Amino acid sequence: MMILDVIKILIPAALAFFVGILITPFVADFLYKHKMWKKKSVATTTDGHAATITAKLHADEERKTPRMGGIVVWGSVVITVLILSFLSLLFPNETTGKLNLLSRNQTWLPLFILLAGAWCGLIDDYLVCRDKGTYAGGGLSLKTRLLFVTLLGTLGAWWFYLKLGMDFIHIPFTGDMHLGFLFIPIFILFTIGIYSGGIIDGVDGLSGGVFATIYSAYAIIAFAGGQIDLAAYCSVVVGGLLAFLWFNIPPARFFNSETGTMALTTSLVVVAFLTKAVIPLLIIAFLLIATSASSMIQILSKRYRGGKKVFLVAPLHNHFQAKGWPASKVTMRYWVIGMILAVLGVIIALIG
Image (cartoon, rainbow, N blue to C red; front, side, top):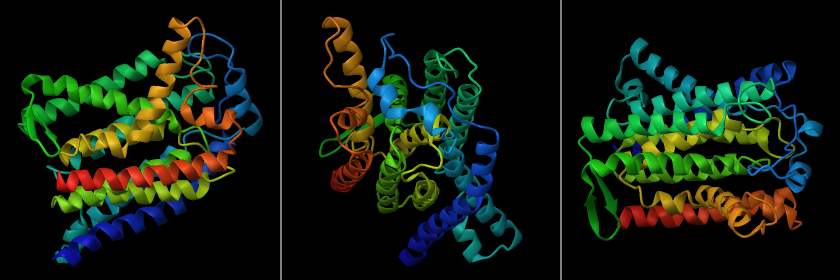
Protein backbone atom coordinates (compact mmCIF):
# COMPACT_ATOMS: atom_id res chain seq x y z
CA MET A 1 0.00 0.00 0.00
CA MET A 2 2.80 2.43 0.84
CA ILE A 3 4.42 1.78 -2.54
CA LEU A 4 1.15 2.69 -4.27
CA ASP A 5 0.93 5.86 -2.21
CA VAL A 6 4.47 6.83 -3.18
CA ILE A 7 3.67 6.18 -6.84
CA LYS A 8 0.55 8.33 -6.51
CA ILE A 9 2.77 11.21 -5.39
CA LEU A 10 5.60 10.74 -7.89
CA ILE A 11 3.66 10.11 -11.11
CA PRO A 12 1.61 13.34 -10.91
CA ALA A 13 4.78 15.31 -10.17
CA ALA A 14 6.53 13.93 -13.25
CA LEU A 15 3.41 14.42 -15.37
CA ALA A 16 3.08 18.05 -14.24
CA PHE A 17 6.72 18.67 -15.16
CA PHE A 18 6.28 17.33 -18.69
CA VAL A 19 2.97 19.16 -19.10
CA GLY A 20 4.71 22.36 -18.05
CA ILE A 21 7.53 21.78 -20.52
CA LEU A 22 5.01 21.16 -23.32
CA ILE A 23 2.85 24.23 -22.67
CA THR A 24 5.74 26.64 -22.10
CA PRO A 25 6.54 27.30 -25.80
CA PHE A 26 2.90 28.31 -26.38
CA VAL A 27 2.83 30.48 -23.25
CA ALA A 28 6.19 32.09 -24.03
CA ASP A 29 5.29 32.76 -27.67
CA PHE A 30 2.07 34.47 -26.59
CA LEU A 31 3.82 36.59 -23.96
CA TYR A 32 6.56 37.74 -26.33
CA LYS A 33 4.18 38.30 -29.23
CA HIS A 34 2.00 40.58 -27.13
CA LYS A 35 4.97 42.21 -25.34
CA MET A 36 3.74 41.25 -21.89
CA TRP A 37 6.55 42.89 -19.93
CA LYS A 38 6.73 45.89 -17.64
CA LYS A 39 7.01 49.06 -19.68
CA LYS A 40 8.62 51.15 -16.95
CA SER A 41 11.66 50.37 -14.84
CA VAL A 42 11.42 50.78 -11.08
CA ALA A 43 11.73 54.52 -10.58
CA THR A 44 10.69 55.12 -6.99
CA THR A 45 10.57 53.27 -3.70
CA THR A 46 7.35 52.67 -1.78
CA ASP A 47 7.98 55.87 0.19
CA GLY A 48 8.35 57.96 -2.98
CA HIS A 49 12.14 58.34 -3.11
CA ALA A 50 14.28 57.59 -6.16
CA ALA A 51 15.12 53.88 -6.42
CA THR A 52 18.41 54.22 -8.26
CA ILE A 53 19.96 50.97 -7.02
CA THR A 54 16.79 48.92 -7.54
CA ALA A 55 16.31 50.32 -11.04
CA LYS A 56 19.87 49.37 -11.92
CA LEU A 57 19.45 45.83 -10.58
CA HIS A 58 16.18 45.16 -12.39
CA ALA A 59 16.65 47.08 -15.64
CA ASP A 60 13.17 46.00 -16.73
CA GLU A 61 13.07 48.14 -19.85
CA GLU A 62 16.36 46.79 -21.18
CA ARG A 63 15.63 43.11 -20.57
CA LYS A 64 12.09 43.08 -21.92
CA THR A 65 11.40 39.84 -20.06
CA PRO A 66 7.69 38.94 -19.93
CA ARG A 67 5.70 38.60 -16.76
CA MET A 68 2.98 35.96 -16.23
CA GLY A 69 5.40 33.01 -16.22
CA GLY A 70 3.37 31.70 -13.29
CA ILE A 71 0.84 30.52 -15.88
CA VAL A 72 3.21 27.62 -16.52
CA VAL A 73 3.09 26.65 -12.84
CA TRP A 74 -0.64 26.76 -12.14
CA GLY A 75 -1.49 25.82 -15.73
CA SER A 76 0.47 22.58 -15.48
CA VAL A 77 -1.13 21.87 -12.09
CA VAL A 78 -4.66 22.31 -13.42
CA ILE A 79 -4.02 20.33 -16.61
CA THR A 80 -2.41 17.47 -14.68
CA VAL A 81 -5.24 17.31 -12.15
CA LEU A 82 -7.81 17.30 -14.97
CA ILE A 83 -5.95 14.60 -16.92
CA LEU A 84 -5.82 12.29 -13.91
CA SER A 85 -9.43 13.04 -12.99
CA PHE A 86 -10.72 12.35 -16.52
CA LEU A 87 -8.69 9.14 -16.72
CA SER A 88 -10.41 7.90 -13.57
CA LEU A 89 -13.81 8.70 -15.11
CA LEU A 90 -13.13 7.34 -18.60
CA PHE A 91 -11.23 4.23 -17.49
CA PRO A 92 -12.51 3.45 -13.99
CA ASN A 93 -10.22 0.97 -12.28
CA GLU A 94 -8.10 0.77 -9.16
CA THR A 95 -5.04 2.37 -10.77
CA THR A 96 -6.72 5.42 -12.31
CA GLY A 97 -8.84 5.85 -9.20
CA LYS A 98 -5.71 5.89 -7.09
CA LEU A 99 -4.04 8.53 -9.26
CA ASN A 100 -7.05 10.86 -9.08
CA LEU A 101 -6.02 13.35 -6.39
CA LEU A 102 -9.21 15.41 -6.26
CA SER A 103 -10.81 15.04 -2.85
CA ARG A 104 -13.16 17.35 -0.98
CA ASN A 105 -11.41 17.15 2.37
CA GLN A 106 -7.84 17.52 1.12
CA THR A 107 -7.40 19.20 -2.26
CA TRP A 108 -10.48 21.17 -3.26
CA LEU A 109 -9.71 24.19 -1.09
CA PRO A 110 -5.97 24.56 -1.84
CA LEU A 111 -6.66 24.10 -5.57
CA PHE A 112 -9.48 26.67 -5.50
CA ILE A 113 -7.33 29.20 -3.63
CA LEU A 114 -4.48 28.56 -6.07
CA LEU A 115 -6.71 29.38 -9.03
CA ALA A 116 -8.36 32.38 -7.37
CA GLY A 117 -4.96 33.87 -6.51
CA ALA A 118 -3.70 33.08 -10.01
CA TRP A 119 -6.55 34.96 -11.70
CA CYS A 120 -6.24 38.03 -9.49
CA GLY A 121 -2.49 38.04 -10.07
CA LEU A 122 -3.08 37.62 -13.80
CA ILE A 123 -5.25 40.74 -13.86
CA ASP A 124 -2.54 42.67 -12.03
CA ASP A 125 0.15 41.42 -14.43
CA TYR A 126 -1.94 42.34 -17.46
CA LEU A 127 -2.47 45.88 -16.17
CA VAL A 128 1.24 46.21 -15.40
CA CYS A 129 2.17 45.09 -18.90
CA ARG A 130 -0.29 47.53 -20.42
CA ASP A 131 0.82 50.31 -18.06
CA LYS A 132 -2.73 50.66 -16.79
CA GLY A 133 -4.33 50.42 -13.38
CA THR A 134 -4.27 52.31 -10.10
CA TYR A 135 -0.65 51.65 -9.13
CA ALA A 136 2.51 53.49 -10.16
CA GLY A 137 3.88 51.67 -13.19
CA GLY A 138 0.55 49.97 -13.79
CA GLY A 139 -1.31 47.18 -12.04
CA LEU A 140 -3.69 46.87 -9.15
CA SER A 141 -2.89 48.99 -6.13
CA LEU A 142 -1.29 47.32 -3.13
CA LYS A 143 -4.46 48.02 -1.17
CA THR A 144 -6.57 46.21 -3.79
CA ARG A 145 -4.28 43.18 -3.85
CA LEU A 146 -4.17 42.99 -0.06
CA LEU A 147 -7.96 43.25 0.05
CA PHE A 148 -8.30 40.31 -2.33
CA VAL A 149 -5.76 38.25 -0.37
CA THR A 150 -7.66 39.11 2.81
CA LEU A 151 -10.86 37.85 1.18
CA LEU A 152 -9.11 34.60 0.24
CA GLY A 153 -7.81 34.30 3.80
CA THR A 154 -11.29 34.92 5.17
CA LEU A 155 -12.76 32.25 2.89
CA GLY A 156 -10.09 29.78 3.98
CA ALA A 157 -10.56 30.61 7.66
CA TRP A 158 -14.33 30.23 7.34
CA TRP A 159 -13.90 26.81 5.71
CA PHE A 160 -11.59 25.56 8.44
CA TYR A 161 -13.52 27.07 11.35
CA LEU A 162 -17.11 26.32 10.34
CA LYS A 163 -16.83 23.45 7.84
CA LEU A 164 -13.95 21.50 9.38
CA GLY A 165 -14.50 22.61 12.99
CA MET A 166 -10.86 23.60 13.38
CA ASP A 167 -10.08 26.33 15.91
CA PHE A 168 -6.56 25.47 17.00
CA ILE A 169 -2.93 25.67 15.98
CA HIS A 170 -0.61 22.84 16.86
CA ILE A 171 2.42 24.03 18.83
CA PRO A 172 5.31 21.56 18.35
CA PHE A 173 6.36 19.70 21.50
CA THR A 174 3.53 21.39 23.44
CA GLY A 175 0.16 20.47 21.96
CA ASP A 176 -2.85 22.13 20.40
CA MET A 177 -3.57 25.75 21.28
CA HIS A 178 -7.29 26.34 20.96
CA LEU A 179 -8.04 29.87 19.78
CA GLY A 180 -11.79 29.91 19.37
CA PHE A 181 -12.96 32.69 17.07
CA LEU A 182 -9.42 34.16 17.08
CA PHE A 183 -8.51 31.33 14.71
CA ILE A 184 -10.07 33.31 11.86
CA PRO A 185 -7.98 36.54 12.15
CA ILE A 186 -4.83 34.50 12.76
CA PHE A 187 -5.46 32.49 9.59
CA ILE A 188 -5.95 35.75 7.69
CA LEU A 189 -2.73 37.21 9.12
CA PHE A 190 -0.79 34.12 8.03
CA THR A 191 -2.25 34.46 4.54
CA ILE A 192 -1.29 38.12 4.23
CA GLY A 193 2.14 37.54 5.79
CA ILE A 194 3.13 34.67 3.50
CA TYR A 195 1.70 36.46 0.47
CA SER A 196 3.89 39.49 1.18
CA GLY A 197 6.92 37.20 0.79
CA GLY A 198 6.04 36.80 -2.88
CA ILE A 199 8.36 39.72 -3.63
CA ILE A 200 11.13 37.12 -3.53
CA ASP A 201 10.40 36.81 -7.27
CA GLY A 202 13.14 39.30 -8.13
CA VAL A 203 16.13 37.28 -9.33
CA ASP A 204 16.25 34.72 -12.14
CA GLY A 205 15.55 31.26 -10.77
CA LEU A 206 15.07 32.44 -7.18
CA SER A 207 11.35 32.08 -6.56
CA GLY A 208 11.02 28.82 -8.51
CA GLY A 209 13.68 27.05 -6.45
CA VAL A 210 12.47 28.42 -3.13
CA PHE A 211 8.81 27.54 -3.72
CA ALA A 212 9.70 24.08 -5.06
CA THR A 213 11.60 23.34 -1.85
CA ILE A 214 8.76 24.61 0.34
CA TYR A 215 6.10 22.55 -1.41
CA SER A 216 8.38 19.50 -1.40
CA ALA A 217 8.63 19.82 2.37
CA TYR A 218 4.86 19.88 2.72
CA ALA A 219 4.50 16.92 0.38
CA ILE A 220 6.62 14.95 2.87
CA ILE A 221 4.65 16.26 5.86
CA ALA A 222 1.30 15.44 4.24
CA PHE A 223 2.50 11.97 3.23
CA ALA A 224 3.71 11.26 6.75
CA GLY A 225 0.33 12.35 8.08
CA GLY A 226 -1.56 10.03 5.76
CA GLN A 227 -2.93 12.88 3.62
CA ILE A 228 -1.96 11.23 0.35
CA ASP A 229 -4.13 13.36 -1.92
CA LEU A 230 -2.72 16.53 -0.37
CA ALA A 231 0.81 15.18 -0.70
CA ALA A 232 0.10 14.48 -4.38
CA TYR A 233 -1.22 18.03 -4.80
CA CYS A 234 2.00 19.45 -3.34
CA SER A 235 4.07 17.23 -5.61
CA VAL A 236 2.09 18.37 -8.65
CA VAL A 237 2.87 21.97 -7.72
CA VAL A 238 6.55 21.02 -7.43
CA GLY A 239 6.43 19.45 -10.89
CA GLY A 240 4.94 22.62 -12.33
CA LEU A 241 7.54 24.73 -10.53
CA LEU A 242 10.40 22.64 -11.89
CA ALA A 243 9.06 23.09 -15.42
CA PHE A 244 8.87 26.83 -14.81
CA LEU A 245 12.37 26.79 -13.32
CA TRP A 246 13.74 25.06 -16.43
CA PHE A 247 12.97 28.24 -18.35
CA ASN A 248 13.50 30.69 -15.48
CA ILE A 249 17.17 30.02 -14.83
CA PRO A 250 19.47 32.84 -16.04
CA PRO A 251 18.72 34.38 -18.40
CA ALA A 252 15.06 34.03 -17.48
CA ARG A 253 12.60 33.44 -20.31
CA PHE A 254 9.88 35.00 -18.16
CA PHE A 255 9.15 35.94 -14.55
CA ASN A 256 6.80 34.17 -12.14
CA SER A 257 5.22 37.54 -11.26
CA GLU A 258 1.96 38.14 -9.42
CA THR A 259 -0.09 35.41 -11.09
CA GLY A 260 2.41 32.85 -9.83
CA THR A 261 3.35 34.24 -6.44
CA MET A 262 -0.19 35.11 -5.30
CA ALA A 263 -1.38 31.65 -6.28
CA LEU A 264 1.51 29.84 -4.61
CA THR A 265 1.60 31.81 -1.36
CA THR A 266 -2.12 31.78 -0.61
CA SER A 267 -2.46 28.09 -1.44
CA LEU A 268 0.59 27.33 0.71
CA VAL A 269 -1.12 28.70 3.81
CA VAL A 270 -4.10 26.40 3.23
CA VAL A 271 -1.74 23.43 2.86
CA ALA A 272 0.02 24.35 6.11
CA PHE A 273 -3.25 24.47 8.04
CA LEU A 274 -4.54 21.25 6.47
CA THR A 275 -1.40 19.42 7.58
CA LYS A 276 -1.56 21.16 10.98
CA ALA A 277 2.05 22.20 10.38
CA VAL A 278 1.47 25.93 10.74
CA ILE A 279 4.32 26.74 13.14
CA PRO A 280 6.84 24.79 11.00
CA LEU A 281 5.73 27.06 8.13
CA LEU A 282 7.62 29.87 9.88
CA ILE A 283 10.79 27.83 9.40
CA ILE A 284 10.10 26.18 6.05
CA ALA A 285 9.01 29.47 4.47
CA PHE A 286 11.47 31.61 6.44
CA LEU A 287 13.03 33.00 3.27
CA LEU A 288 9.64 34.40 2.25
CA ILE A 289 9.18 35.90 5.69
CA ALA A 290 12.69 37.36 5.76
CA THR A 291 12.18 38.88 2.32
CA SER A 292 8.97 40.59 3.38
CA ALA A 293 10.40 41.65 6.75
CA SER A 294 13.46 43.24 5.14
CA SER A 295 11.26 45.54 3.07
CA MET A 296 9.15 46.43 6.08
CA ILE A 297 12.22 47.13 8.21
CA GLN A 298 13.67 49.31 5.46
CA ILE A 299 10.49 51.37 5.16
CA LEU A 300 10.15 51.85 8.93
CA SER A 301 13.82 52.72 9.31
CA LYS A 302 13.69 55.39 6.61
CA ARG A 303 10.50 56.83 8.03
CA TYR A 304 11.45 56.97 11.70
CA ARG A 305 15.23 57.26 11.54
CA GLY A 306 15.49 60.31 9.34
CA GLY A 307 15.90 58.48 6.04
CA LYS A 308 18.56 56.07 7.32
CA LYS A 309 18.55 52.63 5.72
CA VAL A 310 19.24 49.25 7.32
CA PHE A 311 19.93 47.58 3.96
CA LEU A 312 21.59 48.98 0.87
CA VAL A 313 18.34 48.19 -0.89
CA ALA A 314 15.33 46.05 -0.06
CA PRO A 315 14.16 43.32 -0.31
CA LEU A 316 16.99 41.26 1.11
CA HIS A 317 18.09 39.44 -2.07
CA ASN A 318 18.60 42.82 -3.77
CA HIS A 319 20.71 43.92 -0.80
CA PHE A 320 23.12 41.06 -1.47
CA GLN A 321 23.23 41.98 -5.15
CA ALA A 322 23.98 45.59 -4.23
CA LYS A 323 26.88 44.32 -2.10
CA GLY A 324 28.37 42.77 -5.21
CA TRP A 325 27.03 39.22 -5.18
CA PRO A 326 26.26 37.93 -8.69
CA ALA A 327 22.60 37.03 -9.16
CA SER A 328 23.57 33.37 -9.60
CA LYS A 329 25.30 33.34 -6.20
CA VAL A 330 22.25 34.86 -4.51
CA THR A 331 19.99 32.28 -6.14
CA MET A 332 22.12 29.23 -5.36
CA ARG A 333 22.71 30.24 -1.74
CA TYR A 334 19.01 30.88 -1.24
CA TRP A 335 18.32 27.43 -2.65
CA VAL A 336 20.79 25.85 -0.22
CA ILE A 337 19.44 27.76 2.78
CA GLY A 338 15.89 26.96 1.71
CA MET A 339 16.66 23.24 1.61
CA ILE A 340 18.22 23.27 5.08
CA LEU A 341 15.26 25.22 6.49
CA ALA A 342 12.87 22.77 4.83
CA VAL A 343 14.65 19.81 6.40
CA LEU A 344 14.52 21.43 9.85
CA GLY A 345 10.86 22.33 9.41
CA VAL A 346 9.92 18.81 8.33
CA ILE A 347 11.74 17.30 11.31
CA ILE A 348 9.91 19.60 13.73
CA ALA A 349 6.56 18.90 12.03
CA LEU A 350 7.05 15.13 12.21
CA ILE A 351 8.37 14.75 15.75
CA GLY A 352 6.64 17.76 17.33
